Length: 199
Image (tube, rainbow, N blue to C red):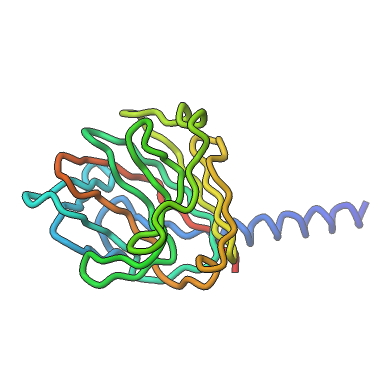
């Protein structure tokens, strides 16, 4: 009996330790912990992080002020208007020029969950077109991204979209960032942005 209690306590301690590792990247109140790159609009409304195209309709990014290497990131997004956006991993910035990798967030038929290397090799992997039906345009979607060493896996609403192993990604260092695409007319909402470090 004592042994069972001890094992149970050890399991509970392990679960609590894991839970404590979770980091809330967006506090629902302001943009503390984030850096704005560009002139597009990023603001908080009703506990949600919102991005909108500015008057120039250019690329814009909102990045974490800290770098994250190996992690599991979970967030929710709701696309309004065009909805062309993305989540960048291990990325660095010079103005609005980004070096890094994007997990695509886009309207239907535009490869949400795929991985794109900006200012580099372009598309590295796209999801099977059949998986696009996991996207709920105009509704809240849950995206999970796991990055560990050279491996990246993305899920959309519980559906695994892509899995990629890439040596260059494995060597990457940088921030997590949200993107607003150029072209104008874009509006995307974000919430519940949580990260669990894996290193």
